[in-house]
Image 1 (cartoon, rainbow, N blue to C red):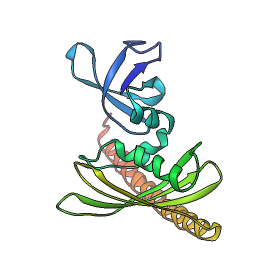
Image 2 (spheres, rainbow, N blue to C red; image 1 turned 180 degrees about the vertical axis):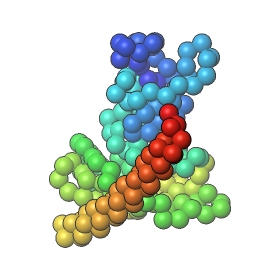
Image 3 (cartoon, rainbow, N blue to C red; image 1 turned 30 degrees about the vertical axis):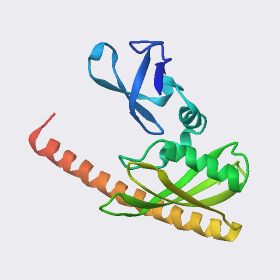
Length: 189
């Protein structure tokens, strides 16, 4: 897959660069003239597809919120879409709400649990498993969640996120107090 710079204020405007790594909000590319690598935000350009898997990633960029191990192919994302379409219905849109790696073995075998809001209609839970460097090993078990079960999961995750935000805010305040104290005592600027 490639990334075309569409922001006119960035050097290399309209240049297509080969993507090395990417996630849902940024891409790391091989920069022109072999001058190393550079990171761009997704909104600074557009993805340029080079195949079927790239088309899926481009259409459903939220899939990139699902963390995959090194050794897990991008075919994993295609497998998710194919499995949903085989067992439920055509995917028009999706939002990845939660991605949890349940286990990873020393032999590279992993299990994941993924919560997706499908087609702005209903939630599904995907239990995925596979083995690193084995594209034919991906297995998906898809379950449409009942409304009550989904709401309970949402409340649990909302509480968890609020706790994390509270903890981060306390950490932020500690840093601010330390900086204020140092600046006050030493006229440090």
